[in-house]
Image (tube, rainbow, N blue to C red; front, side):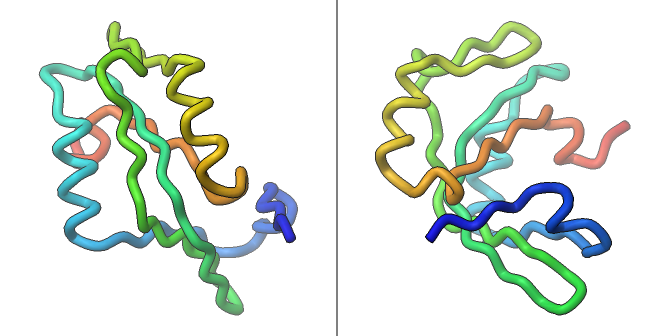
Length: 108
């Protein structure tokens, strides 16, 4: 059974993301670039839902290889990267993590 997590179903709930320290370190290393270069990765997550909060619990990073993404200030991913992972998990369990490192580091 596929569950939809659209805006309407999450309205009025606190939203959170949780991960292990190891996954956090992996994301920080992957997103570390000079300047404000963006990067991306897909991640597999599981939902955790309470009465007031919805949490996406990350458990696997699906890091792209160099030829599966295009870094040019902004970031894009190739069809090869997408196609490799669409068959790996139910589509609802794969999400895109895309952020510049300055957001992760708390810089503004």
